[in-house]
Amino acid sequence: MSVGVCCFQTALHWCSGTHSGKVLAQRARHISTSPIDSSVRQFVYALAKWQPCFPVHSSAVQIMSQPKEFYQCLLSMIRRAKRRLFISSLYIGSEDLELVNTLRASLVANPALQVYMHLDYNRCTRPEPLSTANLLLPLLQDFPDRVHVWLFRSPKLKGLMAKIMPPRFNEGWGGTWHAKIYGADDDVLISGANLNTSYFTNRQDRYISFTGQPALAQYCFSFLQQTSTFSYSLLPSSSDKDQYVLHWPDEQTHPHHFEPKAQKLLTTLQNGHITDASKSIETVLNDSDEKEADKPDVLVMPIIQAGQFDIREEERCLGLLFNQLSKGDFPPSATYSGPLMDLTSGYFGLYKPYQDLIVRSPVACRIVAAGPKANGFYGSKGVSGRIPEGYTVLERRFMKAVRAANREWTYDEGEQASGSGVQLSEWERKGWTYHAKGIWLRPTPLSNPVLTIFGSTNLNSRSANIDTELSFVMVTTAPALQERLAEEVDRLRAHGHAWQGAERSVRPGSWVLASALCNRL
Image 1 (tube, rainbow, N blue to C red):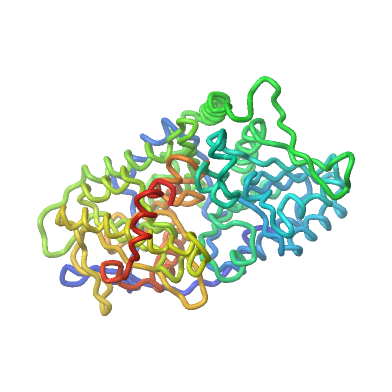
Image 2: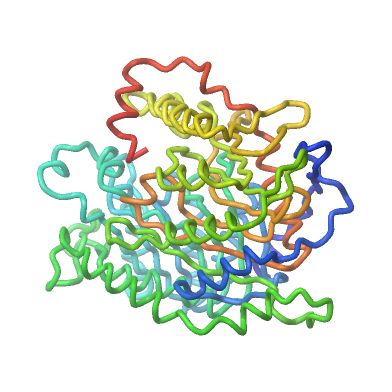
């Protein structure tokens, strides 16, 4: 069974349009294909000079909406893998025995199968009743030549600070391995979701799969292979069957000072995958009605953001995008007809350069952030319980800048929005938390998205500066895929309501927290 089959779903159809200068959440049924306008076209050509570019046919792309679909698709990929499985995540939850048992069953059923896992060192070795490292130990013992686990430890975690910081705060202080890639042979599933029960049940994220794409799958696998050379190997202890050891693979490089090596390897990886993509771009972006049915109609471009290694491809990408969009015509009118950007993040500590791009741009931008109850730290004990209030402080600062620039886009419950500018709303669904992130771009408010950015980045200061991220830009001319992108973002926005942070109570200690940790939230 292919990823496309296992992940296929029948989606609800939503609509959005304009009326009397107002952008509505419900889209009119008559909306046609969204053409690739000149600004997006120029952005794609500019970005392809810097990033790898993979042409794909839209029939190979599936967009899921529910955590349970993500989980079932992941299990299906594991069960049918014949040659390789590669898994990149922050961690695997200690209660997720079905996932580990499915890995074991697949290894038994397929003697040639190799399993590669890339996870975060600190998150996976937390001294809990059962850490991820302990959870995976039996697999390493039973399949020593076929199961390979690497744990990335940020080089920022060193010296006195690393010793005195509690394990959970070490992750926030020094940064984490944050890339979320799930691959089976030549199929790839990209998400922002980790491998934990909540991400399989009631923690909302995004999930996009690509079936039968050997070039894209090999790129993702190569990315993990390169980063494994500056990560610890998780191995069984030779003296105690209940213990594991962590082995640093490079005797020539100190594990606290591998930044130059990481920068060189990741830059070489990207440069090695950059080709003259002009022919592929023209094939995909060709607006001709006579385009051959079997020709690619999707472009996928991976972007690495690893600020600690001075690799800032995401920043360059967004700078290029806003630069091209801002060159368009924005004539004064009662009806806004320019590009419409939707942006979302479960942790809205939006990176300051991104804030500036949004506030200074004439492009209409709707933002959805997690409401306090949908924040993963809501109800936590100790300092962590203050984090939702800390995000409220950051949101207030952002909205103050929006208002100072006369860019606020007011929210109306009846029509959801009016005018243009920048609108902030918050996501809330009873019993759920919010972890979705990314960008969707429509050429006009009446059209469907032609571009999306998805993957692991939260678009915040952490993602930009201390975490290691892999995200993707996807551009498409396929009407059906554009419609599915519209359904995806509209479905997320359906649980949004007007931002209430201005009225929300924030304790003095939370102001201190936000000021002290604003670059790590």
